[in-house]
Image (cartoon, rainbow, N blue to C red):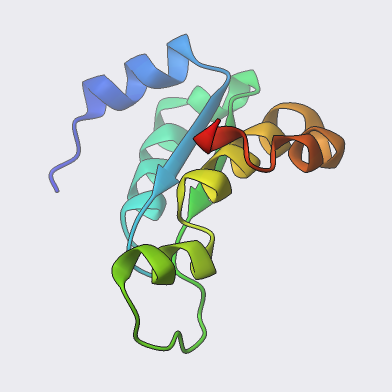
Length: 101
């Protein structure tokens, strides 16, 4: 904070899908972005917004890359989330492994 509201507005105008990714739980950066988008009316035009956060479960300590992968916050998880937002579950199934290709 503070959020770059001009950047958020531009991203919302120029993209079909907006994904927020954070190393925290629900109620952080993604929530602030969603609030800004709602207040500006950007959500009224069909923008697809998804927030990726750490799950509300215990994650065993490990190397950060392994912890992010387990939580779905690695490249594969992000690609899957984007494809799911763009084309539904069928597109997400075919996205597996695409991030490292």
